[in-house]
Image (cartoon, rainbow, N blue to C red; front, side, top):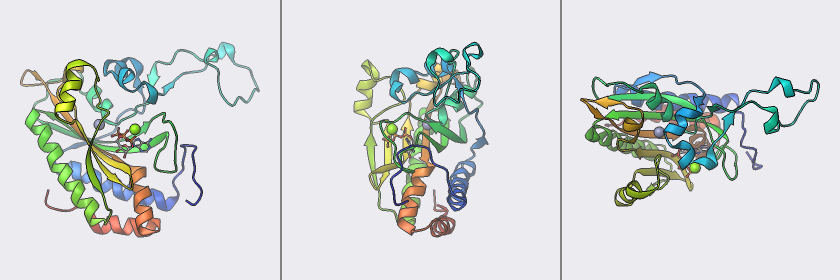
Amino acid sequence: MSTVDRSGLQALSAEATTLLRTLDSVLESWGTDAGAASMIMPPLLPVESLARLDFYENFPHQALVVSPLDLAKREPGARPAHFDPDALLPASLGLPSAACFAVYLYHEGRALPGNTTVTVLGRCFRREEGYQDLRRLIGFHMREIVAMGTREFVQQHLDRFGARIADFITALDLPFRKEAATDPFYDRGGQRALLQRLSPVKHEFVVDDLAIASLNVHRNFFGERCDISLAGEPIFTSCVAFGLERWLSVLHKRYGSWPAATEAVRNTRGEVAA
Ligand code: ATP
Ligand code: ZN
Ligand code: MG
């Protein structure tokens, strides 16, 4: 990791992969211990669905979409380095930028029997202004633990996991700060923007000037947009998100090797009173 890679595309070595899996199984177990269903979501989402969640309003600069080739425009044997838009069919699928969108879409139109927690490991994709090593990638792994239910339930979710993350990072001997951040999942205009200034909707755990985890509340935005209800009312949602490659980056720096970092995670596991 001596030269800086700016491609945004990184393979993980076998040892780094072991660390990612070890860390992810710890985080997944935090979710399942709290009653979360562990699920696998689709790798792509319809553009129409992401548009309904205002993704292209709020994060147009991050968006990446997928197009099939227009076979009528194909030049056999051409070995292209890119495809021009006119060689493509319309893009009706998007790459997700966060793992929780698929969870709200999965529950679309449902009445929940009670407060619900789901955990997913998503591969997320973002166009960024620049890329750097494992710290900022075009595609990365995001473990999320998502709460859906009453306002109180989704706030307790963040309190519980916020404390757990702080204990875990401390036990791993990584100096961190927790700070309020911007870039909410929903619209910046009018009433909602005002509400956001009054009470932050996003907190980040920052290590080495890098957010390795975030706590997000969305009030009942996704409940309304996806028509998900509890006792006849749109649900509230919150999510805890971990960018796994960023954890790898800070752990490697702290422990000096992938096996040493893996050992540290195995010995810690975040099994603190939560
Ligand atoms: P930043 O401010 O650093 O861009 P963010 O606010 O965009 O982060 P979130 O939207 O909260 O991040 O995403 C959840 C987590 O995913 C982040 O805390 C981080 O760990 C990780 N993450 C976000 N963008 C990237 C990226 N381009 N490459 C690798 N990990 C990322
Ligand atoms: Zn989320
Ligand atoms: Mg970002």
